[in-house]
Length: 250
Image (cartoon, rainbow, N blue to C red):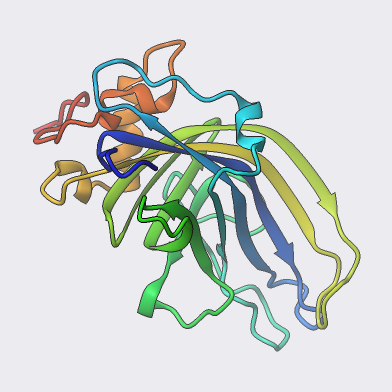
């Protein structure tokens, strides 16, 4: 990112394989530990005006000089080291309780900072602040990502401010791995490719308090056929003081 570029005038487009990994403890086959993992590279687009920001070509993200990101967090908590029925029931993207193994569509949460002691979890990304020190690693304080069919949205925040994000999901891959960790049996991994554009907000922006459901509703209501999710009015650079598309019922 060039020093002259504004946080809120720039769309940060992240792309990479997004995987859900299910690992079952040997002594508790009914209660798996499920993590989500996402890594890749990002490209900044100058998108402060009214023109729709075009997506970078998929091949552009393969440039090894690009800043990188990496994330890993729990979909479900680690299984207790004792036998018994499953006790976790995470929420899926529609907000209803669902099976912790089946279904890629759901909410993928991350809470960082002092809010968690799970050392496994991290959400980090590289940034060149134009100070001559090159790329440095930063982290999100929190982020919730929702996948629903081919749409992906996210809300979160970090030291640079709150943000909303929207994009698309493509492809699907599935594999079963042989045991490679103590107390684990064969892991299963589901992977889809996620392209997600992040828009930073002023703290007074209405969108800074949006939930995932509100953002998803605004994105779906504002998308025009043939454009990307981040071209919806809900992803505009201008500070929003009222909802852009969806009329509220009294």
